[in-house]
Amino acid sequence: MDKLIIRGGVSLRGEVEVSGAKNAALPAMAACLLTDAPISLQRVPRLGDVRTIVALLSYLGVKAEVTQEALTLCAAGVGQFEAPYRLVKTMRASVLVLGPLVARFGRARVSLPGGCAIGPRPINLHLAGLEKMGAEISLDGGYVEAKASRLKGARIAFDVQTVTGTENLMMAASLADGVTVLENAACEPEVTDLAVLLNRMGARIEGAGTSTITVEGVESLQGALHEVIPDRVETGTFMVAAAITGGDVTITGCLPRHLEAVSNKLHEAGIGVEEGDRSLRVWADGPVRGVNVRTHPYPGFATDMQAQVMALMVTAEGTSVITETVFDSRFMHVNELLRMGANIRVVGNAAFVQGVPRLLGAPVMATDLRASASLILAGLAASGVTTVSRVYHLDRGYEALDEKLLGLGANIERVAE
Ligand code: EPZ
Image (cartoon, rainbow, N blue to C red; front, side):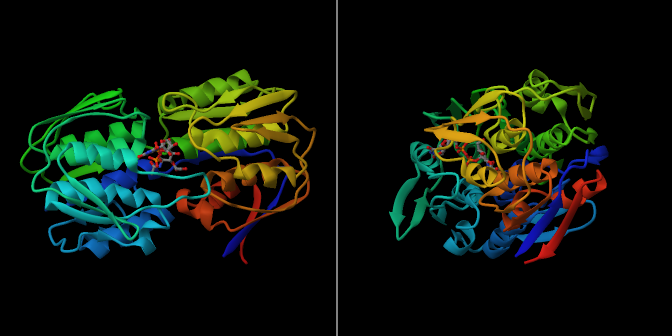
């Protein structure tokens, strides 16, 4: 296992290009199961979760070919319909093969994902939707079995907005008999990006990006070429990196409109933010003020940015209240920030942060993907040395974050533990 050694106090300066979005690439890769024609995806980030889903798809019989330009996936030879526990337990997004397998092959056996560091991660809404489309769902030994001769269109109303639930059912509905309407659907850009890919494959999807998505099922889908959208969470992470180190960073290859809530919040905190067409410049413009943050499904403030903005608030002037409304326990980074001298009190789903003048470097441990980012950001601002262990959590969801930070002048080194 690797660890990162960070010597804080350097103001980051320069330009950095973000990678393609992990959370757009994963559903796009699962979509290859919907056709026997190859799909080619560009700007797929080279990171752990992508490697995991390639392993899962290959296990099912998908042919994967990686070139400099694209990742090409072909599901013509799929002969296995089970997503095994050993793969699913490492990545909940493996559940994204469920909808496509049932839609195209009429069967699937997927291990239940279990919980993870940020709370229980049920898939009841995925299963309820498939049942409404006529699938027979049963649970057996920690696996969910789904069978359907042919899914039929249905009206499905989600009682909470679920990103991968919306993606799973949008993919399943693409090959169903009849029209499916998804109500209270997730509006994340990654959902919209998947719909763009599916329509390029011949699907008939309208309303993606809004809370009502209509899918008119078709007999079959074709291959397609698609470039996944930039990673908005990686973009936001670099925005905070610039702010927390008192630097001046231009982030390129991004889509500023996907970061409205984050840009507005940083501006409110006294940070300079300038939007370009596909770039964002972020710079320290005087002291950082404590602001309140409440996570919310898109276009609200992303839960995936909560840990990162907490790191910024820890050294801000004044107090801030950070409320996590999406997941049950996404405050695993708090205890580690406390070890660096932070002043945070958690009451229920709210963290009360009292800004301190300076963080002190310390050995800390990553517990989940975005907590890892939060600790690195804190280490960049802290005085002294911070060692972040278990960075495999980070490597699941960021492509070469430490190298990109090095390019901005950070004093950061990766060593084998
Ligand atoms: C997606 O996870 C993202 N992952 C997560 O990013 C992100 O944090 C999350 O959406 C929220 O934006 C991918 O896209 C691969 P949800 P997902 O279903 O789809 C409850 C990261 O850091 N729920 O939108 O698994 C659930 O418990 C990761 O990149 C049910 O109750 O999240 C949660 O409270 C972490 N039943 C809420 O809905 C269900 O059937 C939102 O979860 C499904 C979800």
